[in-house]
Length: 60
Image 1: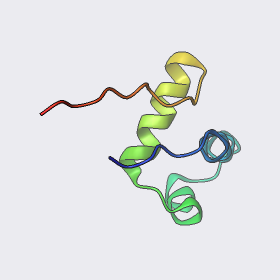
Image 2: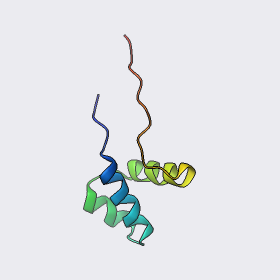
Image 3: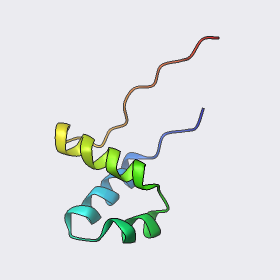
Image 4: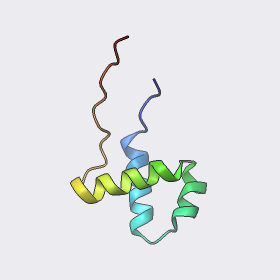
């Protein structure tokens, strides 16, 4: 399973978005996917937090 992105990166991405940098530029600067960016923005807008969701272990 892949490791979660750091909170520092998440905060810098959200601050960039809030400062008016376009999503396309953010994707190129931070090398993340559009789905990841949209998920972080949605979570920040809903909860005010950029903390990753807690992961659960898959058994099987």
